[in-house]
Amino acid sequence: MQTELHAKGYFILRKFLNSTELEALRSACTAIQEQYGVRQVLQQYPAIQAALPVSAMHAVLSVLGLSAASTVRSLFFNKNAAHNWLVPWHQDKTICVNTSSARLRDYQKWTQKNGIFHVEPPADILNSMLTWRFALNDSDRDNGALKVIPGSHQAGKLTLEEISQRSAADQSHYCELQAGDVLLMRPLLLHASDKSRLCQQRRILHLEMSAASLPFPLQWAERMPSIAHT
Image (cartoon, rainbow, N blue to C red; front, top):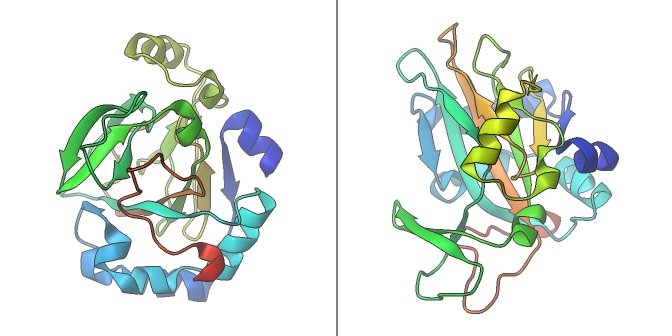
């Protein structure tokens, strides 16, 4: 797992959730199952946090040397017949922070979404992060599965022109998941997704984790308790 994450930028945990855990997580998401996108989902819906398989997650984090990691952003996505979209090739370059008043060197492109400040940090912060994508439904190339360009995270932050060049080379791979699988990925891995051709639900719980501390006075705006101590 550690070797593939380093080399490819992603790794799929097959059947990470057993049937009971999957049903518990689906049930916890019932209140938002018809929405197409929810930010700060763990803060707004504590039942989802409670339904996470904490022990199994901590075991994975320990293997990766991230025992002290905690969730620093949480999102819920649901492609369906009413909300069906495509996402162009990109890297996840922003983090959520507590203030916009800290004009620190190498922290750029400040924005605000839903009252939360977002900023693009240095690459070392992004490289310290690990994204978990819990599949609540089967997700294949016909149902809007994420596609990635293996190894692209190793190039660091890319410009729009560089992203265009790399994606044009057509070396993408579809990360097809079954319900209960989890996709682990690095934020700087180039990824995209097509519209679903089936128009069925494709629900994903997206969690970004890090053990890194931000320079004073910045703090992670959505930091949840460490998985190790939950």
